[in-house]
Image 1 (cartoon, rainbow, N blue to C red):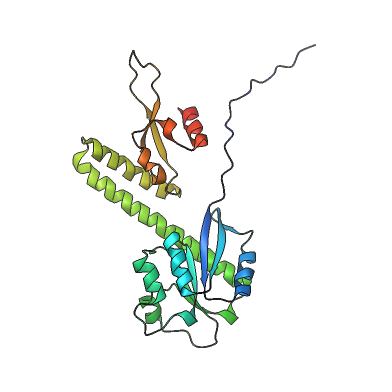
Image 2 (spheres, rainbow, N blue to C red):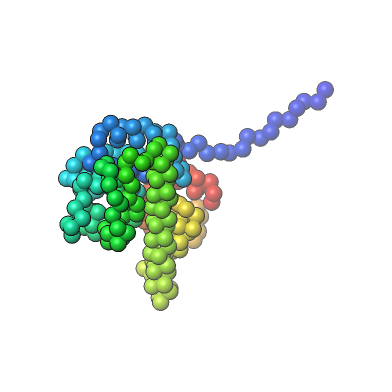
Length: 252
């Protein structure tokens, strides 16, 4: 009788469960019941792997305070909060004063009436204008999906532009250590944008040259983006995310 051979166990990584990324969606000046309904509508909905988190703000002051604390993919504003003749309107403050340039802004009018002229919408940097009574659940899904996809595209284009600027400026002096770091950051920005990764998605590691006194030198972070950029030049052991650290060690 032949004894069955046991396949050798293959090394594998047990990665920690990571929370699903979120695109915040702010509703400003709307009835609480409507906000609750929209939140329920998107409770099990994801766009490009991101969950949609609806955050109601019933006053302009509350909305501005929220914008100081985080960035939003989409802001839907009740038309009653906007004055056609007001130069310092809410959207301008959000975009320019708080530098929320990539955020999509949509105005919804709860009262029946005519849609403002296109020139006004362009001047106010508003991507869409709708009347509430003409929006059903499917319309909300389409509006938010398109806005989030445009937000994602705008962010990716911005990262590509920043990365290209770093690469161009770094090529003037590649022999300078600081410039090499600058160049590496630019390359990773480009890769992140091309691969559709967030700013924290790429880390480059390298093992230092081995010497007789240090035959097993540790891995060092030679380039990184986003929150990990501050660790460039540091040992990989300084990385707080142990699952990422383990993955990199296994790859090497």
